Every structure is written in C-alpha cells, then in structure tokens.
Length: 345
Image 1: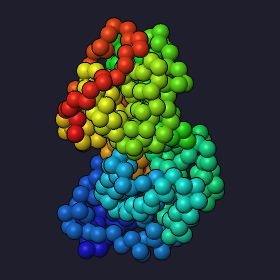
Image 2: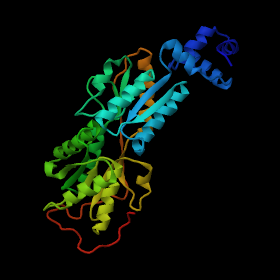
Image 3: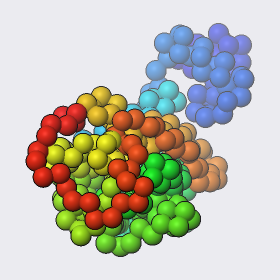
Image 4: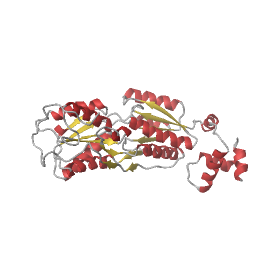
C-alpha cells in the first residue's frame, strides 16, 4: 500500500495525502484521509521518513521509573496516542538520578528523536535546561518547571480537596506524608493541603509534614515519626497512594482501625485503591489523559506550533478509609494499646 494508492482512493493528490498523514489536525479532510489509510492497511515507513527529515518519527519519554503504576499509566496514554498518529514512543527510566537523567536523554537524542517528553525533572537539578539547546522540542508531563510547557494535574487543588474533606469530618490534627522535596508536583499537593487548612483556621506545622519517598515504606516510616509525636494526628494525607497503603499497613500493626480511629487520604487513585479491605479515599488524577494530552501537544510542538501549559482537574473519591474524627477536637489521644485486626490487607 503506497501514498499513491491512498490518493487514488481518496480522490486527492499524493502531496495532500502526505500532509494529512503527518498532520495532527482534526480537520475533516485530514481525518477522512487518515481513516481511509487505516482501512487500506497503510503502514508508515518510519525509517524513510526519518532519513528525509533527519529525524525518526519517534519521541523520547523519560520517566523516573516505569515500574511505578502512575508513570506507566501516563506512558500508556502517550504511547497509544502517538501510535494512532504513526509515531513511536521510546521510553527510558532515569530513577530520578541526575547522572542517569543526562545520559539517558543524550542516548535518546543520539537516536534522532523528534522531541522529548520528560516526567522526571527535579527542582534541585533541572537538567531540562541543559537539554533545551539540543535542537528538539521539550515538553514536561506530571512535573513542571518554569519556562517549559507542561501537562500536569492541578496538584494544589487536589491537596485542597484532601484537607477540606478531612476538616469537614471534624479532624483538626492533620499529618502529611510529603514525598520527595525535589518533585514540584508533590510539593504542590502539600502546599494546597496546608493552604486549605490555613484557610479553615488550622495550622499544619512543619513537625506534621514529613518528606520521604513515594514507596509503601515511606508511608510506614513517615507514619511512625508522626505517630510518635506527643499529640499525634487523627488524619493523614499521603501525596501518593503507595505511601498511603504503606501507612495503612503500619496502622493495622498498631491496632488502629482505618476509617474509624484514624483517617487516611491518598493521591492518584491507582486500581488497587478501591480493592483494599478498607478502600482508600484518594484524589483521582487523570493519568492516562495526562499522557494523551502530552503526546498530542508534543506533536504540535514538533510541527512548529507554540503550546501552553495545560492543568487537568483532579477529583476527590471518598471511600471507607476516612471517617469522622473520634473527638470533635482531638488532643493527646494515645494509640490503642492492644492489637486488633483491621480491614486492611
């Protein structure tokens, strides 16, 4: 199947077909030609196109870790959307390591990718500024950085949703499992949470905010530190679901009933969140949509168009891990002394 075959079937010139198959436009004729090409079984010759354009029809995607369910879901959105446009995604994990970030980015650039989508930019070491002069468009996803277009969830708003929900339930002593302090998305969630609490007359002091990682072990470690305070929290906000799940495991071991003695809110709404014995209240981030929008915007950038930041709206999903505060205004309640089973597994 060639471009000439598609042109004859569509009743247009070969050059019109060529432009339509490269375009990301939603114009009616462009969409008609692309549908016809798909029905006829046309497959783009990526190597030939790359030789003509001096770049392959590929986009490099850099993520901290593809084993992370949040990042893998975002990548699915990127990969699916690019494949529909005749492009390929090449992904590399950088593990948030500055040296690996640079080497993996250079590796992708050496393969003549048309652009880079970065989900791993660090606030304390923004290597994106070094890559900006390499001659390819750069788009950030999930994390943002000033001066570069980004596709993100409204993380501050999500943090506000979490705080307002817990305060509405009567909680006044609020703990935060804050994640890495070099990830702007996580910092924004904490900022939104603290600002919303302050707006309601509640101060989430620094001793109530523990920075760690985003693994289940982080929830356990930060939770241990917060529960050992003289006046421990009655409710927790973890900036991602994995840390929230680790925290819930710790509470089970200490005999605390999640949703009754103590409340927990996560962030992202991974599939497991709804399947726990105590289903997790969380802030749903539109992960796959983030990837899809990032892919489309990256293609627009490659086509020479200017793109702006896009911030997608999160949603509060209320489940059984949050409930009313045990007392209207908690002060100094100790932990349950004798272990008892909880619903969390």
